[in-house]
Length: 300
Image 1 (cartoon, rainbow, N blue to C red):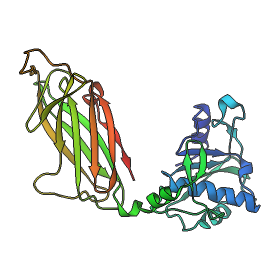
Image 2: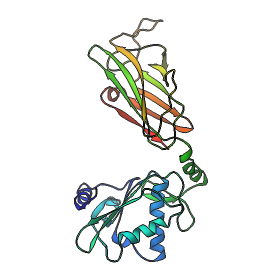
Image 3: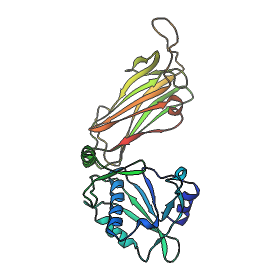
Image 4: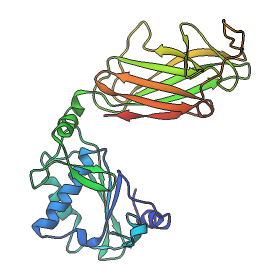
């Protein structure tokens, strides 16, 4: 729930604009065709990207070193620009964006802010100038043809978020867990995770077979693959699966060639594959891996 205090907290904390947040001064709302076109352009760009929050009624600093940071509330005259008026402008986007929420924030009896919460869409939306836009850093840019096609494919492939954690007990036994969450609307049928785990994971580690000892530039790791069990259950929308591999620490790994202790890599390399979704790839330092769940990211 948005209110005046929450907006003022953004200003006090000097929260910078981002891919998912943008501030607009009161003058951004206007009844000219140009102003209406800018509203449509900004909202459709959020939906075509990752979604986000657009706040009308907050002015940014004009100084170069403070650009994209909120300076003050610059309230909108709600008598001239009502919530219903703003909704009508946004609804002119083609095709219509489902799930948009507009929260009015009252500053006084006649003025306030409008917080527009825009979900990521499952298709591409066109602005009034017949151009498709996306957000990039602080800018709104026209989309290339391949980007439009990629957005339109969102409803055809799953959207999965991946996280990793190494759970370990005092006896040195534990397991490496990879959690896959289907946060989209499409069933995820096939999935697989490739892992390269340091042999020194807070103490020497021995992964249960099958795993392969390998090295990069003289630094060693265990390489193995995680996948579904013998019963290949899909990941339904709004559900998740957790893949695991047991391990034991306190085991000294020695080279079969020279009898010397092997040098370990310092981070785990993870690659997550789900149907036609682009792979999720990440590198996680060993120390972080054993402390908490680490989100690896997601793709749409």
